[in-house]
Image (cartoon, rainbow, N blue to C red; front, side, top):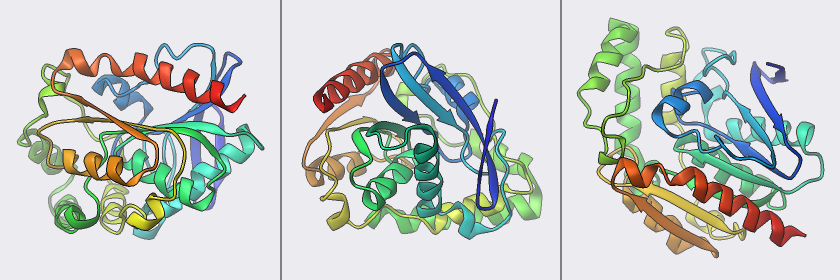
Amino acid sequence: MPTFTVPGADLDVEFSDERGHPVVQLHGLTSSRSRDRTLGLDLGRGLSGTRLLRYDARAHGRSTGRPLPDDHRWPVLADDLLRLLDAWFPGERVHGVGPSMGTGTLLHAAVLDPGRFAGLTLVIPPTAWGTRPAMAEVYRTAADAVEDHGIEAFIAAGRDVPQPPALAGARETEPDVRADLLPSVLRGAALSDFPSPEQVARIDVPTSILAWVDDAGHPLSTAEALVDLLPSATLTVARTPAELALWPAMLHEQVTEHGDAER
């Protein structure tokens, strides 16, 4: 796989060129392209007839990074994303899709460069605004625990967190971040939040929000708040694995619809 250099990291990149609309796919915190496939969140699988760019965020998966919390804030990740888009899709409007941290990254990128995106698919939006401080404290505590007790304790604690019903029966996965970088990645997440509601309300592109229920880290309240704020947004909620399995087809429909609207 090729790598792409950004300040402080080399990003591992995968590009599938089947002509058609340009799409960029992100992933969530402590995940990667590979881990999202296991979790059923690789919505780009089967996304034929597009030019699909996937990559591992800095310090995740096969990408490198530095043990600096500021490096892992969402505005920095948004800058990484825009640099990638300038290299792969110069001058083009792109459909962006990403879960959790990927949603935060896309929203910051859309605020920084409003004309860059033709459409967005925001997947399991994480805590934001009023619900963010409590989650930030969870991340800081987890970062301390990794430093004091090692990554195995962090993995064991994660097994005690109830899975949302949409992930029932999913294979167990582990964080795809090196142990020496994980505390900084978690502290970077603790320093992060969505752009302000006023900024989000100015993101005027067709947006599809895919959420699930019973997940404290990705509360339905965030998805509902985004639907209320964004000028052109729809919400789909998965409560079962069967409903989650429909999301890739929904993404394909969204990309086609939003891309055709550009023509």
